[in-house]
Image (cartoon, rainbow, N blue to C red):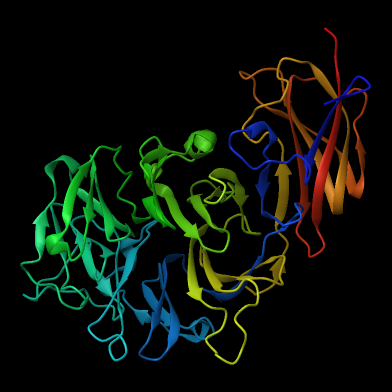
Length: 499
């Protein structure tokens, strides 16, 4: 709006819209969450559960009725499999799997497990079965293991390879040419007759994922098909026309509530659910900057209800490059920003719901965050802490993480044809905020950056009179996390320049 010849923008509780339809009015956040009153605060901190010596390659949770506990299963690149409740796993010694997964096989590449849990014939007396493999791991085989550390076998005692996923009350295995599955209601039995060949138009089978209502999708190198109905013996198989998945990474696909989101070559991101929708356009340049599409990890974070996309950065190859996790809000159907660990070398690669925040029936379970969500951050096993506003390092010491909010997150400006000059920025909040100006004079130019000043909110930051003029701008506010840090809204005043 205009006020006495000035151009005034007010972003925050009044006028701030988190909708993709108006990207110039949408903020691009880092490590912030929005309260019900419209103000912003730091996300929950990540408390240390266990610091392993090698990166976490698998993280999964399962409730075992045999002893009424919610368990975490962790496999690290030291080829050790750990199991335990959230309060016990730090002391678990781990099962050595180096004989079946040689340490030399990890090399310097990033490996991520495809993992699922299948039921037993009697879950109260026989543990549910955890099955996992590493699609693309090794040269000729992708052995499927269970929680005992052994390779699973079929009814003829032949070792099974492929990528496991659950469909109804069966566990299915995607192999290069075939799909095989367990006995209905028994993940411990794989009859040799339970198989079918892939539709030839999908190419080589890569990965499968369960959606909902007994619908699953199987992805191949050149296409995909759906499985509808259970048991699988009577299910309907339908070839779908869609871009292929970027494989062979197991984490190229994620189930997010009732939607399936997968990574395609490009890189591109597609959402399945009421049709097929491409969703990566607003962040395509960010994704493209990280190179090989098979080095991405897609997962769902149930605490923030977001698809998380982490381009995995190998610090040995590109030291100093930040590990950022892009956030796509399922409730807002929009990209809203990024999360980042306090240590930028730690990539957030998986989040799992461990169940309620306590297994005790005598302790109330309605304390925030209402359930335990464990997060793998490189070699650190962590969990969200509702009373912490920093991330623990490997020694358990809390470190503040960077928080920021930026206007016009997709490079748009409300008045791109008008030459302008910044006057001042009003910060209505609590804490110390550094204000920066990003500016350019056209879409073909690179963005330049200037630091305007620092405000101890609430307060003003005034721009120098010789600040450069521009046609497009972004205003960015940065701070370090703390319990009291808040941001209510930002007022931006600028003057139009006659040419």
